[in-house]
Length: 303
Image 1 (tube, one colour):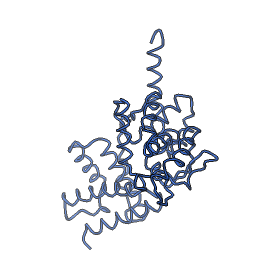
Image 2 (cartoon, helix red, strand yellow):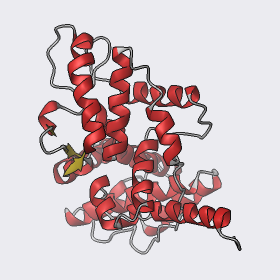
Image 3 (tube, rainbow, N blue to C red):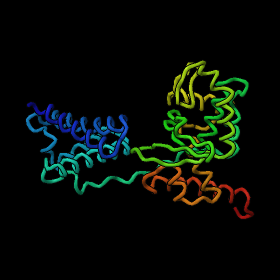
């Protein structure tokens, strides 16, 4: 068997293991595979006679990473590629396919944490009020925006939400997040009211007889895509004059930031967001701290 085929076989085994152990999404699995395929091709170009992934050394990995830096790749990209390599070689070591992990002692560079753009509470109110409630699609959009801000869902979790995941009586959602980790997300009275109104007034008109368990549907009765919802957020932001650079997770960021601004415990916010590691949640404390600084500078006599 040729070397490229052997390497591809190893990547297949690794992808299967990631899927079985962590239940990672197809996009995440593809990201791991692309990073490792890049390293495999770099080995082959450098020396076709010595390009087996199982024979790569610590020096090979360092040389590869140096080549990525020389190519002016972003630090976040090379950091992710190193993370993929580390996980892959830990897998090979555990499977007994290598005796020494070549990624050992290669430290992942500390990256500057990018603070996500968030909205003020006033801006959120403007965004929520943007949809035209006289239209079924406008009522759907209002219910979606309210649910997103009330629960801190990821956009992918929102668009795939099913009625079987919602408890109207308890006002909570049962969400299957990243890594197939389940969590409960509260909806709140305001969001529940909009969800009920959408369900009774707009959804039957959009479905027009189509039967589906998906809550938020398009004019053709199908589930919405991430791209379509992202377009909606941008359009509504322009409509109400919000000039900030928004992302599909803008309302999720606002959800976390506003909770912390109002005194919520970081661990509680971690649970609500479905973060496996609290260090991921801690980025929002920086946003909240910046907001406190702004308030101090504006209102304190010595600010």
